Amino acid sequence: MNATEARTDPPLGRRARNRAARHDQLLAAASDIVEESGLEGLTMQAVADRVDCAVGTIYTYFASKSALIAALQVAAVQTLLATYHQAAEMWDEALEESGLNDDAVESLVRVLAYGQLFVAGPELHPREFEFLQMLLSTPERLVNPDDVRSVTPHALTLLAEGLVLVEAAVAAGALSAPDPARNDDGFRRLLRWVGALNGALLTANANVGALPASDADAFSARAMGKLVTEDLLLAWGAPARVLDAATEQLGRMQRAGSFLPRVGSNA
Image (tube, rainbow, N blue to C red; front, top):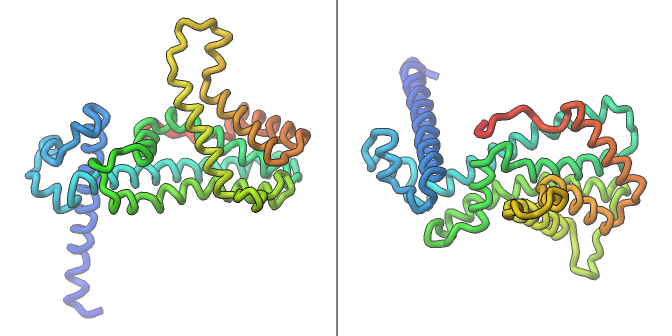
């Protein structure tokens, strides 16, 4: 490296850092606007007004409103993925300390924990989880197909973590292998599972004020998520003994605080 290059590197580094900070500031402003006014209220001018800059500045970071929404979705998925990785490390440590030494049971503990983490998503990261839901339901007039395709790999990375856990349970003998004759495989299992968990979250939003307390409890997202996961695992060949042991172990981890990382709603 010559002397000229050495002198010019620091300013370039500062500019890059400043641009990254500005990018994050714009995303935070856009996220606040969506929370307050919905996607329809999100405009490039609204973001510019929020951060007190020229609207043209926004376009140097995001080519369109569609690209801005896609960037919000990518950031949300990355936050959710980071929380999963933190949680998974806690599960690994807790299982190692438990002395369980049963690969089949441990594999189902991780599957059950993933399901419980999924339904806890709206509580841990309500805004980010909503952006993930938008990825599945946002009209094309707001997010064009090219921008959706830019987000999809990130979302699939999050889902792939669940797929790894399901396939590990098959390898450990805790679940039967999918039946190719039924056009079934691990990915299709994962989609059914996530679909069922998402359905539990939607059902939990029902207005149950007129129901007896005993019936209203049935609408708990965590309770539904736990049961629907157990139902699917049994259908996929999990021995009842192994599933019971995994459920008990996960319960011990939850009571010991070894299940969810300590995160804020917008961490």
